[in-house]
Amino acid sequence: MGNPVAKSEFLEWLGGINPDVLLVQEPSKQPSNEVLHIPGMSLLVSNTNLAIWLNSGSNGRVELNLPYVQKIVFQGVPLFNVYLDAYTCAKRAEQLQELKRLNNEPAFLMGDFNLAPLPEDGLVGTNISNFNSELDRGSFQELISSRAYSDAGHGKGFTIKRNRLNQEICFRCDLTLVDPVFILQTTFQYDHTVREGEHRFTDHSAQVLNFVEKSVASYKTAIPRKIASPFAHWVTDTLVTTQGIKSILDYGCGYGRDVEHYRKSGLVADGFDPHIPFGWGKLPDSKYDLVTLIFVLNVLPTMAERLKVLKQAAEYLNPAGKLLVVTRSLKAIESEVAKKHWQTHNDGYWSHPGKQTFQKGITPEEVSGLAGQLGLHSTPRTLQYKTDLQTTAVLLQKS
Image (cartoon, rainbow, N blue to C red; front, side, top):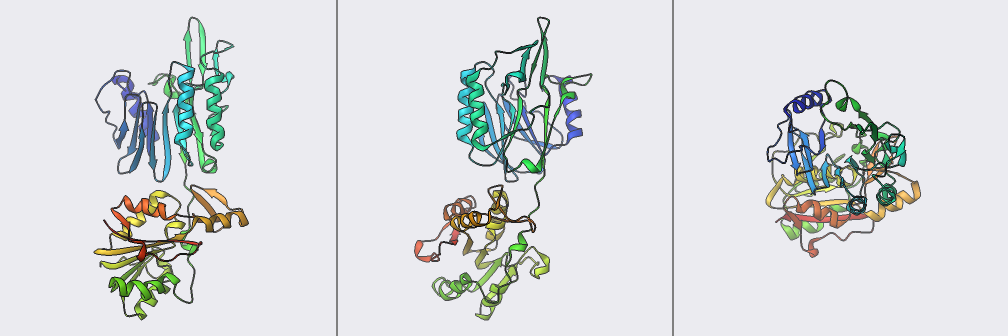
């Protein structure tokens, strides 16, 4: 990107791709503090070897920025940008072992691994190259096995072709590893035009990954109750008197049975649910002593959505207000998975593929972790709901 001609060709090619996320390895051969301006994109994170841009207006969270790997979370999906050592097998093996330790969740790993996964992926003339060895290939296979990753580019050609000393050097070292959780929603291809022909701008093939998030019908998990939930009864029997609560918003109220219970108990109560047919689609314009999120976070398929909804709910709190979060517990969901053989999806499961409903067991620690990002913390244990093993309930307040 330090070459003006290459930069121009790159920008023209990129305009045709129009990606949501751009992962780049070796962004410039000349160390520079200059940040490349890419129309319609914003630089999220960079170092000497790696850089990541996002489509303007998009948000991503940076979790790692090391010389050989960056990790971001984009729309709830972890992405690793990889550039392994270009000189020694031992160093690459060490970095691959570290990569295996760094990731314990469904993710995509993309970049220049400086490694031909199979001997036939690296040739000098008709001979197997000795650039890689059993040492770094062994660590690569351990990484693959750690989560049963799919090597998306396997069998799709070389990503580098060079002529040296009258011999053609062919390598496939630009790799994309796809977690099995995402495989059915992913298409992948190498674009060799970026290193071939009149408009080439690099010596590596580009990797183009398309990931389509399967829609989730969270509203279908709502239960048409005949009576209010036990959590609503705890609110009126305990919290109203001990905390002086006079107003309540049930955020994600479903059919609204708890809202009716609060109103019959003499409280100012409103409900909101984004599924318009439930009849609670109007956003309130008030602040409340208590906001409840009852079985909402556990039906949202990404961490980003859970954080977004938690933030939206917290915006309706009075300065001294409290937020009650109730979810299905980890134990409850694991029991369902064992009995019904639910399929994994992101960090949870499809509870009914036909209805496209999702469920995730959530621990109190996870709720507190999300809340902490928003300046919320758990109330004293004496105020907490006495949960059974099937649910997690956490009462939060502003820090």
